[in-house]
Image (cartoon, rainbow, N blue to C red; front, side):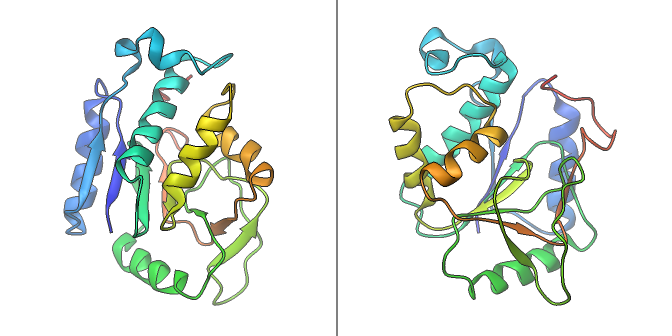
Length: 201
């Protein structure tokens, strides 16, 4: 399963850290998205956005770049941000999660990272829980065909005025997207737990 990692190129320590984590778990099928750094944005890049910071626009565009690369995704894909910190036994747990997802038919996005200590009360032996919103975009899994669906939504929406994690909340019910949270999480957000400084704020 392909993993995409959104990376702000000046933050080299983040890239080095996540590469080391991927190597530790022998994960080789990954790609860094390094286009659209805030310093490189053109007027044409930002014309659809309003009321959010250049750093937030930059990150949003990196996510969009993934959706475009996987326009006709026939397989699930994983999206990470560059401050992702894997939980112990990440690969083993991820494999279990992916296998368990085969039992769920009606999902679009699985949010699998910790964010603002948001959790759903879990029960034993259950990994996925329907949700009424996102839980940050440090790690999420997209089902087959969902990239095209999200790009159509972006095309329909005349203006984007929220960072991508909040934007996911806005579009969920409007476009009947089906979200789940995983419990336990698979990734912690390094900029939230003090390992890295925030690149957005």
